[in-house]
Structure formats: structure tokens, C-alpha cells
Length: 315
Image 1 (cartoon, helix red, strand yellow):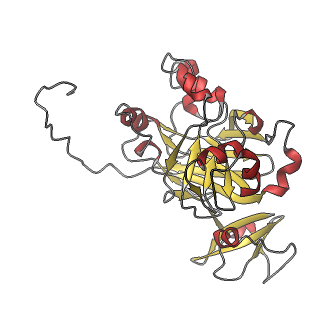
Image 2: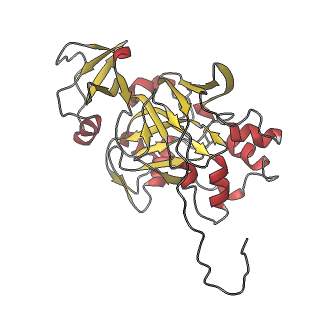
Image 3: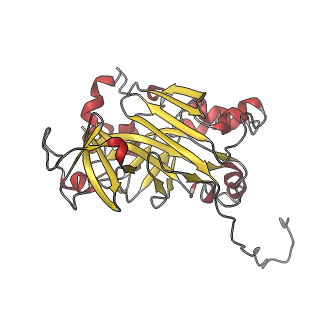
């Protein structure tokens, strides 16, 4: 089943996607409500006349309380490390690392994406996200299988120059990843993809990204170093995961510009500019297409008030 959220005449509604039509659910019912209540619509149920997909704006399929974005593709992290004359850190192999990103900065499958204030090196990241369907803590990977309700495409838009600057402080990423995350076009329930699971438990879904119609990168989701079940088990270690929580796979191999920059030693292809159109397609999940537009200028923030008098570390 495919579950979507759309906007029409200023009102947001949840719907079941069937072919090129949306079958709206009753007013006031959200996709997150369905997840939290553990009940999906009955197949074939209709509450009102179907709506053509192309006649509405698709919103993110749900509004999660938390988004954990992992980094699980070795090819991607190897390319990023190459840009710093480095290799993959041994610690990466020990556990599926993640960071928390901004759940208030979600965009729909076809929304415009403003360049973050002050950014000169804007980038995209092709990912798949798993959505938690049941609360749990200290899960095993086997238990985690029953806690994943479905999957969607995730684009983790990234201000690479801001990210590099702030991470020198040994925190982050923060503002470098704070402005936009595309989620969509809809949530595909896990049962729809079980026949794509390989012998090692990975979903074998082809992933591609284009810029203005030109091919940039491709991979398969099966190249993840950990399964989503293993990632969820790690995320739940010593804490709770809740219905609607989102777990990003991390960028697939060749799924962003920064990886290509690292391998080539230069910004080739160049950073994103206003007017660029980025399309991401994942087999079984659909496609998202966003256009980059100008963003606002940064507001002025004063420099730190230096409190130490040694002068060490001052620029």
C-alpha cells in the first residue's frame, strides 16, 4: 500500500495512492495517526471520489517527531574521505553512526528548495528512509523487523561549505543540514517490498539521481553495510523509538556531488545553482523532483566574545 499526504485548496489530507489517483481518507486522519494506531486502511476502501495525482501538491507523507540520518554506504564515505586525503575511519565499521536532523524542515516531493543563507556549495543526497511503525527500546534486529512499517525516498539537502566550517568545532552537522529535507513521494508499506529482499536481508532497490536530466549517480540499496533492522536496533539501544520516527539510509554510492568532488579533487560537477532540477528515482518507491531556487541572505550574528586571554586558536 502507498500512503500519501497532499494539499488541496489550502487543506492537507491523507490518501491511499492507487495508480495515478489519490483515494482520500476521512478528514482529520493523518498518516501518522494510522501508524500510531496500528491500523492501515482496508484495500479498496473509498470514502469519496478519487483525485488525480497531478492536480494536487504532495506533502511529506508524514510529520515525524525525530529523524535519524545514518551513513551506511562504504563507497560514499570512502569518496568523502578521499576529499580530505583520508581513508574510511576504523570506527565507521564498528557501528552504524547517525545524527539527528531537523524534522521541521521537511519538503514535499515536488517543492522548490531554497539555497541556505550564505551557502556557496549546495548539494543533494540520494537516500531511502525507513519509518518506524511501533514503539520499542533495546530491540534486536529480528525484533526490529516488525517495527518498520514502510519506506520512502529521502533527499538530505546539504550546505557543504557550512557543514565543513561548523564541523571543525567538533560538533554537527547542524546548520549545514538544517534547511531542507525532501521526503516522499509517499510511504510504501513494508509488505510491498518483501519480495525485493535478498538472502542477506537487504532490499535490492535500484537508486538513481539526475541533474537537469543528466545522469549523476546510481547504486542499489542492497549495498548498505547494515540492514534497516540492524540500524533500528542500534537506534533503540538504551532509548525509545516511536511510531513515525524516520531512519535515513545515508547517501548511496555516487549519490551526491561531494563524493564526486572528493574522488576528482575538484568541484566537478559544480555546486547546485538556482534553476537546477534534481530528480531521484528508487525502484518500488517512486520519484521525487525538486527545483533549486534562491534563498535569503544570512542575518548578521556577532563573533564570539573571547573570554580567554591566551589568544590561542583565535583566527
